[in-house]
Length: 408
Image 1: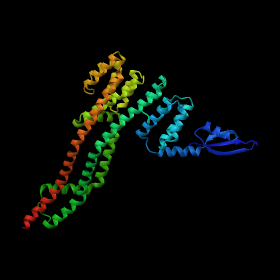
Image 2: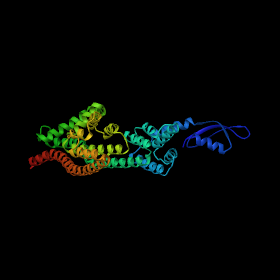
Image 3: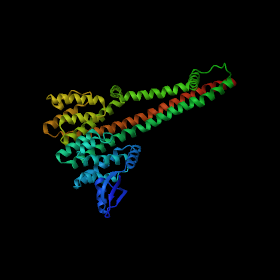
Image 4: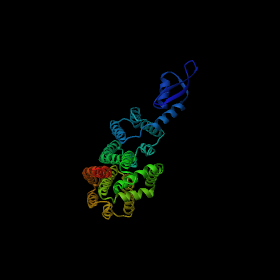
């Protein structure tokens, strides 16, 4: 809660200074009036502002679950007739995340200054997406903000559920891959050199070793001799790759590449279609114009290839073509069923309901595809890990077996 510093006069006309905690300046003035003090100046404490901002900056990132809970609670309070400022004040006072708490306080100040709720939200794009602010703006214009917030909460829950399933499916394979890499380099750095020295001590420096053992010893010696160059180059390459992917050209090339990977492209395609259908239907249901809905949806999908496709579709719709006809020509990105369902929705005037069914269908398809991919990746990773360990074991056992035969 903000801290205010005040200068006031008491009933004896004596100057009094002090501090008090209040939700806003208006509440601070009310507190002083209740104490029979006549305020001369009331301002928020500068040190308190710096301390709160520093705490907010150091706070945790705002999670999607926090935004969903905030949206549902705000919807319930507005439905009950609670004024927006009072509802935000209540939610902000109970927010556990300091970054989110500070964000709510800033939104309250903007609204107190006469700014619409949607514009106040739009100032915080790291927390609230374009879809969120545009749907809130449409809800404010139509006077159905509570209903729009319910739609937003449902949509965010669906998106969060898909993200969690994707992360969950990739966690086990990534852990196995990490263990494999660590085990390989651990053996190459610590075990192989020791075994190599032992073999040379037993068989002599001129002993002829199997080819696989020579390769392993050579690779081990290379790592030990040039680690101070290899490590910086490895980390530098990863850093430059990540930097490149963040650039517009790099992001586009990366998104094109993942749409060509055999096992991945199907999941990416279904995920993008589900997100398109869910987001576009929510915006249309909120009363957002088709062209604006397409523009916002293009940014919300998260794939540059789909974004460019939808922007092109928006231009063609602007020139008089129907969206279903445009989508029909983009079969590489959108399955035929999407265009067919859109056509039905345009004819019946129920585009929102039709696209919700499309979104539900493809979200189920994504779940099934992720489960199928997980069942394939796990044994493949185990085979790779076993193969790497087996290769190293063979490079060790073959010369030992040869020495044993010579001794016999």
